[in-house]
Image 1 (cartoon, rainbow, N blue to C red):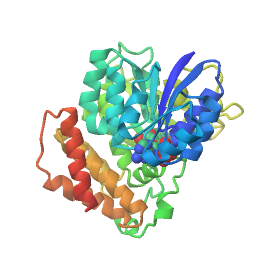
Image 2: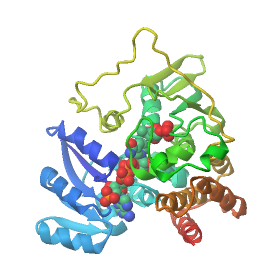
Image 3: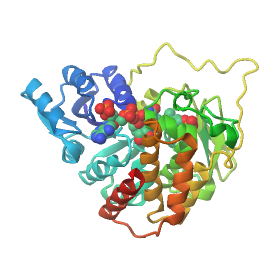
Length: 377
Ligand SMILES: NC(=O)C1=CN([C@@H]2O[C@H](COP(=O)(O)OP(=O)(O)OC[C@H]3O[C@@H](n4cnc5c(N)ncnc54)[C@H](OP(=O)(O)O)[C@@H]3O)[C@@H](O)[C@H]2O)C=CC1
Ligand SMILES: CC(=O)[C@@H](O)[C@H](O)COP(=O)(O)O
Ligand SMILES: [Mn+2]
């Protein structure tokens, strides 16, 4: 039985991970589960998976659960997330949304456990630090993000071959083909309608601005130790090729499949036998089927350029970009700013930023907090 702790178990990734675990109950034991405020969903998970520890964001919710489940260890806040990350599980699935996942990821690595990472903001803000900790502690960092899982799968059995280029695919989001003027008019409702994937709200907006692809470029850089110049974004609206790797010998290996996150989650959890998506198939290979690819329009979707530039500049720039993006997306979700204000404000904040370098964990946390306060206003 593989013991698994899941941070963010009540979210889109977390609940799909529990789908995979449910289909393989003899293979997994759930040790810790966490939520933000959704204690009703967490209660259902407690009843079904009997974790030893659960964590909520706030004390009030923790007290409710402690009363409801007197035998259960209930904690809250970052100390609770760290306790879950350092519990006796062998693998930590981090499916938290946002930079809040950095510290628990780091502590999980230092406690010697393998990390299944969906929480891409962790690598955007602290990639260099996290990868250094991974190498020093000898744990495995297994990507859950569908493109990075695809690249990871392409690399299996090809470790000796030199990577020439990573082809990072993108759906193009709900506004593919729009011009700047049209983007100025889009609504929150339209931005939340992703053409292919059903995901949490924040990543769905990131996909609409294409900042998600920018975050994924940075994620790929750290995960696969590949220069930014060798990571190419390709818009592929069918979302069947989840990414590909071109090797020095000019061969290309691609991973294809249904847009179903339970596939990359299963890969990261170690290919459990039974898969919860039986009965579905990739009915693509038929006469006349074709796959289309196009360059992203980075004049319209400038977030991609901002991400490359921030990662190229290094130091505190990616931390600032990520923090600003999280706050601005939240403002857009709350109807406080327009869609194009997200990119405009990130660009302005990066232009005005005085960088710092050689950041430790506390520096990253402090810069993140300062930018959040500034952008929240
Ligand atoms: N969804 C997807 O298909 C994909 C997601 N990812 C990445 O995976 C990560 C998770 O995404 P997704 O599942 O969509 O996100 P969701 O918003 O659906 O879930 C986020 C999880 O974090 C919890 N959470 C929210 N706020 C807090 C808080 N203040 N303190 C503690 N926990 C909190 C949520 O709890 P609650 O339920 O109580 O709000 C939930 O369990 C992100 O980094 C995303 O970019 C990557 C690829 C695909
Ligand atoms: C499912 C997943 O991995 C998401 O990151 C998804 O890829 C977002 O799609 P975009 O390609 O539109 O950003
Ligand atoms: Mn992705």
